[in-house]
Amino acid sequence: MDETLISIILPTYNRAAFLGTAIDSVFAQTWPHWELVVVDDGSTDGTGEVLARYADPRVKVVRRENGGVSAARNTGIASASGPVLALLDSDDEWLPKKLATQWAYMRERGYEICQTDEIWIRGGRRVNQKAKYAKPEGWFFRESLEMCLISPSCTMFTRAAWERIGPFDVRMPSCEDYDMWLRACLHYPVGLVAERLTVKHGGRPDQLSNCVPCADVHRIRALVKILQCGKLDAGQAEDALAALERKVRIYMQGCEKRGKSDEAKQVWNLFCMVREGKEVPLNSLC
Image (cartoon, rainbow, N blue to C red; front, side, top):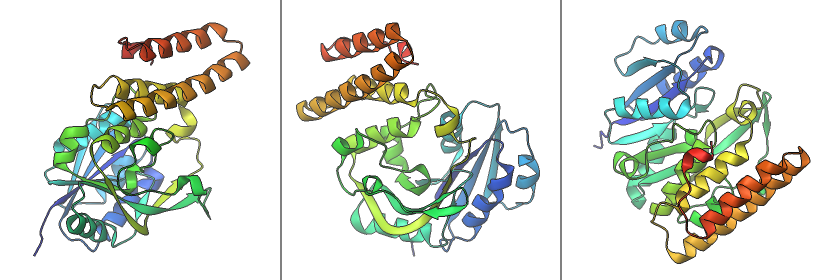
């Protein structure tokens, strides 16, 4: 029988009200061979009390000073033992057969990276996803340039894949998943379990999408990185450059509306440098 250990990486910061639900969904999994690495990223609420309820040898708690979700995920993966990794955010949860179904799908089809479909809960109510958020399967680097098409809490991948595409960029306060999955889609086809086995909760002000300003600039940064990685073929580079120009123009429009013409010129000059094949220092973007 397959006894592959799946390491679950769960970063958390001041989400004591939701953390227990996420952890309980791990304990409810039908796949028995798992370990849970919880990275407490400097929480100052009741997170410690919640974690104290789970005195189980399969649960490893790593505590660190607050450094953001990317650093927390990287820390958790470095502390994990399994050859297969699954991500779970502390305000999300899984249905009981998520791990078993997903790992079986990966084994049968030879995927190194796979995600499940998901249920969206916003403000405590289930909502329908728009068609543009439908998850694709296979090779979809071009499509992933426009928006993030892989959800962390839905994702499972092999350690071999992680060693090729990781780590998460700790310099990015948001859109770190967009940045990571661009690299993933460049190197691997991505499997899709077309069952809603992950429940994603949103619509709260403490989420990165709501509390980190100027997400567009971080997407621009991710596109510059992928263009400068030296691994794109001519078609991929053309697609990525076109996506970068679209996002730069949108960002410039926002700058002009806020009376920040100098910033608009700066980001356009950055795009021109990339278009001309010049190296752009990444620290100039964040």
